[in-house]
Image (cartoon, rainbow, N blue to C red; front, side, top):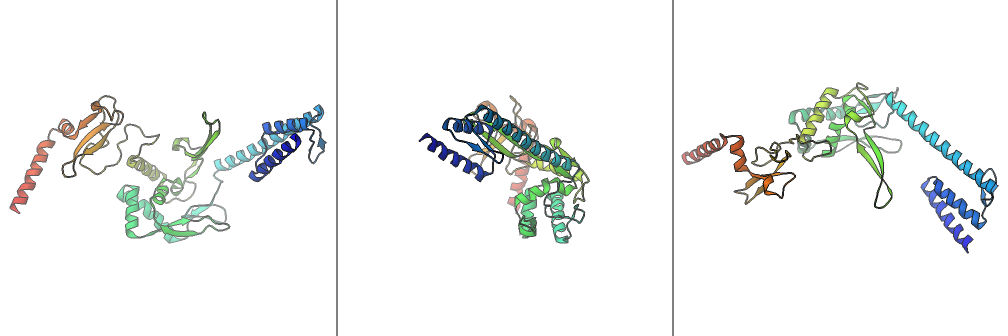
Length: 335
């Protein structure tokens, strides 16, 4: 009964391992050898048949397992290092995005389709003109223009024209390939142990900052913009960011938003120095605004009314508002 149960579990485990194309872990091999030893099962491979109940055969199986594991790790290490070596020379080429092609010498060149080139150049020109990726997206959508993207299909990677989206505009502005730069290692994978489930959690696609990029080769291929302009675009995108990220400090003001608050993104708490956010209350016709500290939002000490902040920051603002209101009323009465 025990032998039949072990045999059924072993066949199920090995079938799952073969289906996933993964090697059997070392601790599983030890457990399997122990089960085979106490159940009288034999282990066979292309070299011979081994009896786990024999100490000599167990030693041979252990040594062979360790040697095979070292060989596998050595092969993986050599392949990874060879890839990094090619990346440092700028020779790791993948499928080029829309706007680039591979010539006969396996070098990146600008697309031969002038319509594709014109669309990509228009993205950068409009960003210089409008100053925000969202404004470029809104203008593009309002004009009803399609956008070129490269589809990854088996044995073919055609350029197709699709409706514009904000993600396409943002990724085009963010990617350094359009500045003529070769970058390798912009993202990485981390593995951490979850203390609650005791399982390894894999986080993929974690972005690195530009200063932490392992490989960055400028002037690697023809670009649609210069690398200096690319850096300016990244600074503008970072300044326009509304949501705060891990790299956002307290000096980040953010873009200008709708509303009557003149100090949005600029006001700082007098207690802790953190940013103060704007909140509105009341009916739409007579809404009042307040500046609230990002830390002490529930505390009255972290709140300041807009009518109290304006005279302290700009003494002439109340009189200016009254003058503007009086001129507006006079104009409406004479009209």
